[in-house]
Image 1 (cartoon, rainbow, N blue to C red):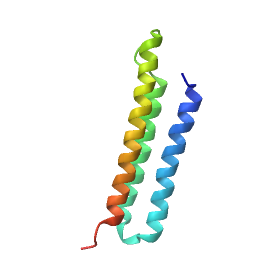
Image 2 (cartoon, rainbow, N blue to C red; image 1 turned 90 degrees about the vertical axis):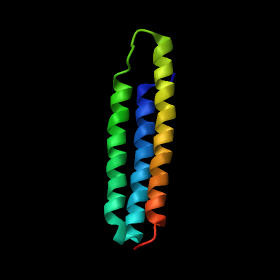
Image 3 (cartoon, helix red, strand yellow; image 1 turned 180 degrees about the horizontal axis):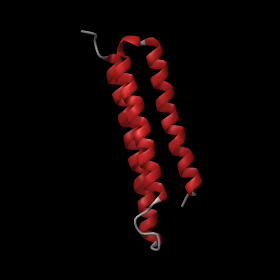
Image 4 (cartoon, helix red, strand yellow; image 1 turned 90 degrees about the horizontal axis):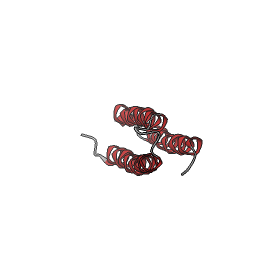
Length: 97
């Protein structure tokens, strides 16, 4: 099992990648600023949720359940990060009307 410090660094790194891509998109697509800022807000909320999940596993004394919990956290993290990148991509690629 990876250390909590490593998992938290991974969470911070992935959220930082989302936010930096959002700022880059904001630079090129100023007309879509509200939607891009919304993606940044979603990323920050996601980071806080994952830190809460990592800091407080449901069953601390059962190693098997703890291992399953952190595996779930990692899988969920990757799914949600992909979802936010997809959301940013759809915002950027949307036609202006």
